[in-house]
Image (cartoon, rainbow, N blue to C red; front, side, top):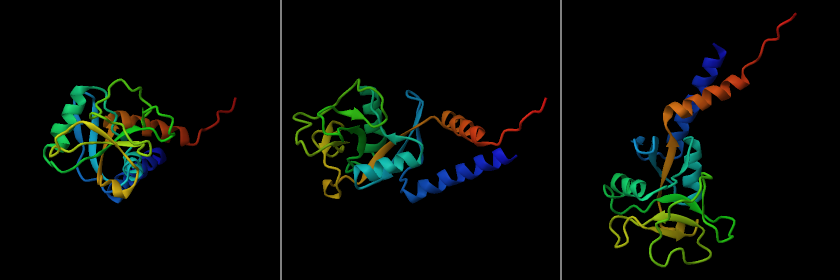
Length: 179
């Protein structure tokens, strides 16, 4: 019973943190990826990524054109002015763009001429109201970049819950059997 109570307390903490970090939308499930996606507030890339971590995920990793189109239709088209952060970054400034999730980079959708400025080490998607809608831009990780939201990708809830249960199980006290 203590394990169940600990799991319930952990889930309550995660739910409370969703509000604290400014989750803008309820989770939207993409059956093609098996993941949930959230629109979160975060006027810097780092703040949006922290919101993703609090939800059990990261800023979105976009693996193909179909996922990029789904994100545009789901998040950008209904709110044409948003240009959300995504998880592609070059924070170590080595010229190699990588997903914050650690997944391999198998698809890129940079706008023409992007990435351009060497001090811009994180990325966002151009809004639906822009002529380059749905294409990617590199930007600095600062408030002045004008990006106010991020798209967070979280593994399917049952996978996340199983991971939590496993963690709680590892923390549970073990009884020793005497011979």
